[in-house]
Image (cartoon, rainbow, N blue to C red):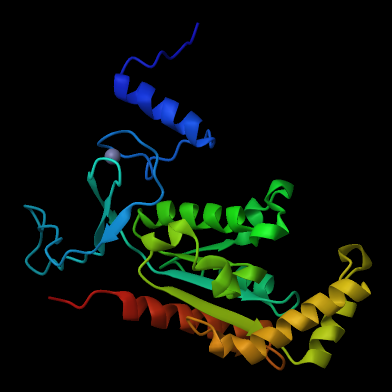
Amino acid sequence: MCRFPLASPNLARIASNLAAAGGGVYNMFNVCAGCGIYRVDKAVTEPAGVVEPAPPNARPDFRQVTRTALAACPHCGHNHPFLRQPLLLVGGASATGKSAILQQLTGRVTAAVLLEADLLWLQEFENPTDGHRRFFETWLRLAKNIGQSGRPVVLFGAGLAVPENIEPCLERRYFSRLHYLALVCDEDELRRRLLARPAWRGSGQQRRLKEQLDFNRWLQEEGPNQSPPLTLLDTTDATIQEAADAVKDWIALLLELQAPAAP
Ligand SMILES: [Zn+2]
């Protein structure tokens, strides 16, 4: 016997819909509060009138800051208000500085939640035919839910600097703007860094070396032509500290630009 019976018909419907969705993952945001159906493909709007009133005991200088948008359920039309945050993505080839910069900035940058994308990597995401789509959808869903607590996410990971990986995702619609920063490096210096890595990482293997060098070159040459265009940060001559400071400034600038103007 089930220890926690699903007494509510609505809960039973939610459970049934989740099972039908094949996920088995309980995700409140994507489950409609109106009909209980699990839908990722909600219609997102930002009506000009969606401004939350100041609380009754607010101080006179209270500034209402809102990024509230509405997600309408395609099944029943129920509108679900949510915070439509920006998403900042930092990518680049191996050895361009992603992990070291993230390590430097963790705890120093608190206006956003900084995370390493490899945290969620599982073998089951490995599917070259779909460009690792499930992996990116999973991250966008997580970032969207983290954003509901009021802070946007800055995500670090190699393939995140490629808009083609991210822009087609169903979960993309829940973010206001996506900003891409690609870390790049002079080819000789990148080769030197990769060959200096411990052998167990396999970075020096001919095929993997070529993949990283090709990816780095593609970012340098094609990054500015992507839609949206990538911002490039060349880490060839920068210390980790200097590169981290540059990323910190980039984050601060974008978050400032995204903040709604004071009334
Ligand atoms: Zn619904």
